[in-house]
Amino acid sequence: MSRIRAAYYDPTGDRYGLPTWWWKGAPDTYATRRQLRARGLRPGGQSVAGQVLWRGVGGERVAYLYRLDLAKPHRPATPAQRRAVGRALLARRTCSTCREVRPYYIPRSLGECLTCAYPEENP
Image: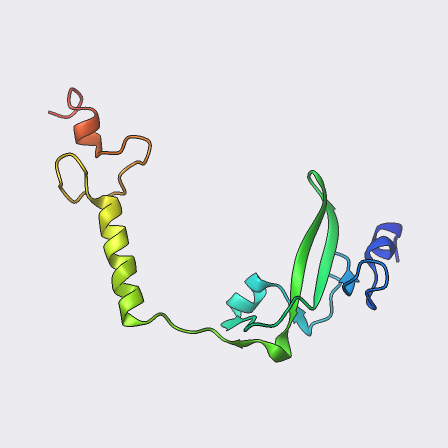
């Protein structure tokens, strides 16, 4: 085991307060939120069960781990939630000046569609 791996190896949690492993060194019974999501799971109210530490840009980085056996299935969005997202995305494509729905998202930096923002370039 290298020095870096040995520095982050603490499966009992004595040194860091949580069971800790090095990058890609955690057991298969733990997963990050992103890994849970890829499997169609969610933490389901459980607390953080472990962590992965590694040296990254700006210092030490951490990824929190959750137990797979306590994870719950991902809840699908309700029809009301889907409608709300659809309306929000439609609002992002509607120009506040000319009120036209554009095939692209209105740039937040401009606050209006490209035709209204640059009328001299768009006849």
